[in-house]
Amino acid sequence: MREMATPARSRKGCMTCRRTRVKCDERRPICGRCLARTATCVYNEDPSPQRHRVQRPIASCISCRRRKIKCIGTGICQNCSAKGEPCSNATPMAQPAASLVDPSGLFPFPPVVLGGQSESQRSTSTVDLRPYLMSFFRTVNHFVTLGYIHEGDFWQQHAIQAAPSTLSRIMAANAIRFGDIPATSADLSMADEWAAEVGDKMINLATTEFGALELMQIILCQHYDFHTGRYTRGYVMAGMAARMMTFLRLHMLDERQPPPLLPLLSLGSLRRLAWAVWHLDATLDGGKFGFSSIAENALTLLLPGGIRDYLELREEACHSMTEGHHDTSLEAHLIRALSARQILASLHTRIARNLVPLDEIPELVDRAVDQAERLLQAPFDFVNPDVEFIKYRDQLPLLVSVHAMRNTARRHIHLLYILIGKTRPHRHNLVQEVEELCKLLTHALLRSIPLDPQIAMHAYNGIEVLLFQPLRLQLESGEEIISREAISSLIEPLLRCIRSAAGQSTLVALIHPEAVNRLLLRGFTEHLIGHDWHAVLRKLLALSSCHLETHRPGS
Image (cartoon, rainbow, N blue to C red; front, side, top):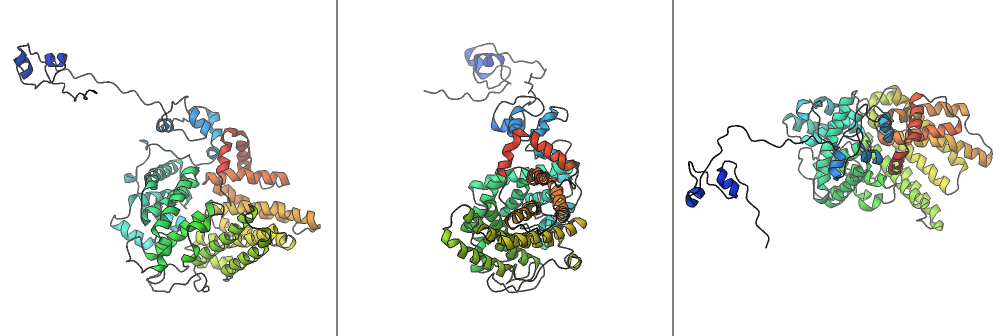
């Protein structure tokens, strides 16, 4: 029979009972046990304190302690070095060559730190989040699908200290890394720790249910993780968001009565949240399964409609996607452009993977192009940039995102036709669309507008179009549609956009040397600077981190 566990004993008993390992009732001058046994009862009257075991300092890094493996090496340990992960034991002087393991080490921001906050870094309680939150609403809130937090509602809750602290921290972290306030290395380290802290709390909800406020935080965490190299957790959070969106049926809000206007959960916020999850789910898988989990036709375009306008206190009616383009706000243009892009990208992916019968491809292409053109037919082209940048001066990041997404959708139309063999006119049109994208980015960079890192992906695709589509057309028909000097002038803003975003996003940092490599292959070296050459050299030397490239999602 198993013995019962011995209860914890006091150290104040008599020495006789402690030697015989029996419980002492600590009566003085003679305890009950010694009195019953007529034994000599002696108490230790030494006033000196008891000797305590000195705990050795923990030498293992945080990553090895979490995985319960032996930590080997000084500075960056061997386990973290082999996996290309940040090591909490890293020191500035230890193993200088180990910096080649992490491609993000080239850029001014530090890697994400998973451990607790050091004494030299600031805690949330000692940092005023208000400047960062204001920067969030000026910049990150206008990125492609992150505009679902109502600014007025949030500040009302923040004034009475009712806004969720985790939501405030992840908003501030995104603002520090992607916003318009210059950030130091200490600021970026603080943002990384906030994002890691909030992400650890959110990831624990993977097996439970959660509400819309947690969903807002999960999407912001996913955005931060995906652009700081934590791709696995980013994919997990994207799956969590899609699962709970389907479970909560937030995308079916138009089929139920409007709920009361709760703080931070107005109908407009929920609809924008539904679109954010739909876009996230539809783009991470390359467009193959985007429509299967969240029904696009269940969403409306006007935000919110029915109760009050999202940005103004006035009532307005809802308009669905198929009933015309009555809403001309930037948000509505963006949603229509995202929907058009997804329709085209989904078909392009299915054709490329041989999932569509050959005899059905022309009909499906014409149908998808017709749907996309109906969504893009609202007149909103980048014709007069000076007027637009003044008119939408409070939404400049959103303005650039709208035009970039509309441009991407039109390029997908030409790529579809090229895929089925209609090459000559559409290669020329593809180059013209990239010229419009270069014009847009030139004006955005001139005004120092904070850009969504996704736009750097479109800039990379634009470089590929300029380098190879004119060459292919010349080989096919002998026609030269653009000169080498014109290509060189168009490449400059695209490369500047990638170079700028690479300092914020490790995902863009991985494609930066790829863009430089393509320019080298075609001999366009006039716009390359030391930062570009350094990125390529680090890419060539970082052989142990080549597995990071496999996590790059489809465009």
